[in-house]
Amino acid sequence: MTRAIYPGSFDPVTFGHLDIIKRSASIMDELIVGVLNNSKKQPLFSVDERVRMLCEVTKAYANVKVTSFSGLLIDFADEVGAGVIVRGLRAITDFEYELQMSQTNHIMNPGIDTIFFTTSLEYAYLSSSTVKEVAMYGGDISRFVPETVIKAIREKFN
Ligand code: ADP
Image (cartoon, helix red, strand yellow):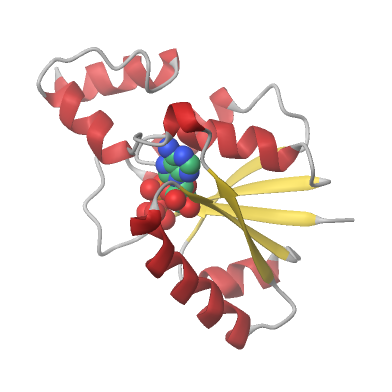
């Protein structure tokens, strides 16, 4: 059985993330979406809020689970018995950091591999930070995030 983990901040989840979730879940037996509880970042949504939104938007996928984690990703992957880490690549700017992370993780635990999904073209520009910026100034974010997230963002900024 192939269990994979898709880690990230998901602050908030976008259609770009959902695309990676859908595509990776279709080739894995089980996909765990891991929401990173990162004390260094100042997120808009709490970890619990991010987990709740992700649960809501992934409920149609039977083999997708959502959970939060803190500490080292490679330790968490090992704890949950995931042999694969899934990451998304949007542009060359993502590449350098992702390459370094995947190589570091592989040295720390050679039993766990990272695989990359290249973004679907229609989401190549999309990031959680852009969504937050557009929303902050009252812009339309309906092409970027699901309805649940639109509501949650509106509540935050009101
Ligand atoms: P992180 O803070 O770990 O980068 P993010 O929530 O921003 O967390 O992203 C999680 C993962 O999803 C990363 O691998 C990122 O490259 C990928 N990702 C984010 N947005 C998109 C997108 N529009 N298309 C494809 N992959 C994406």
